[in-house]
Image (cartoon, rainbow, N blue to C red; front, side, top):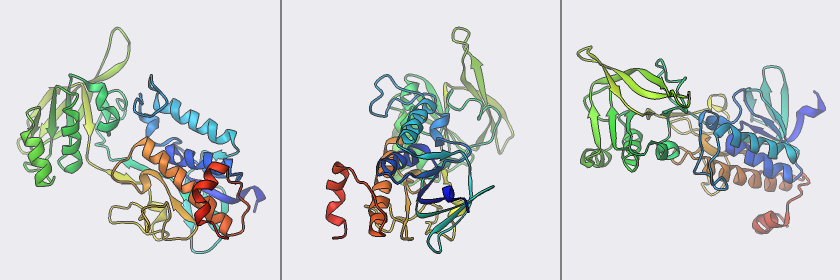
Length: 337
């Protein structure tokens, strides 16, 4: 095996969690290898504007932010390779990780492969992502002040998104394919009692329509084409935004049978206060284990914790880790003596 493929630490995935883990690990001189995936940067790569991340008072585009994260990780010594991991073996150490063309080994692994929003797969949806189509009301709701928006879904997430969006939007229409919601009774009551929320039942979105602004030249969502699943009747509903709230899917397929997953496929945390998994030396960070917050800043915080946990664990295994004074002050009580 190529000696360059034998590492102390491999980070699988990128995004805020992976890049933050890489920054911390690289500053500890672990020279981490990041197998970042073919779609580097995670979900922020389809986010046009980020205004809720500290340090960017004027906002920043998702791709630009991820570019900064990557540059910082590489500046401290992270090797970033834009390839997808196809298989892992955590049954013994060193751990083994494969891509299409290479095999790698590592004493420790951080998983930061994130989660992917589930999309409708209808015409216009992919083209208009970041231009009025979103899967995160917390991230993008602010941009829809005094506008009518559509939320697609019928579970707790959909109604939570709809209720949150009423802080900004003039009206929120929930489009649901059935005549009853799947959400909890408490969430239903909140939505039904909100005068800004209305419902279109037994209906699916067949197309998301965009219109180009003649002044800016930018295309944005202008309407959705709907179909009633019982009558077959079609209609067009004008709207300034579409929020898809039919769920997220953690990117954990290759880890099934390797680390413990919950019923929805998220990586289980034996100790919620750490980034540990059930496999000693394997850590998880970001949306791959977080099905509640799913924010860039919480993912970055998870990445920091995963790197610190990995640093401490590697040092316990006899690997020389250069921990900065401020980090050492935090972890010193738990270090072996």
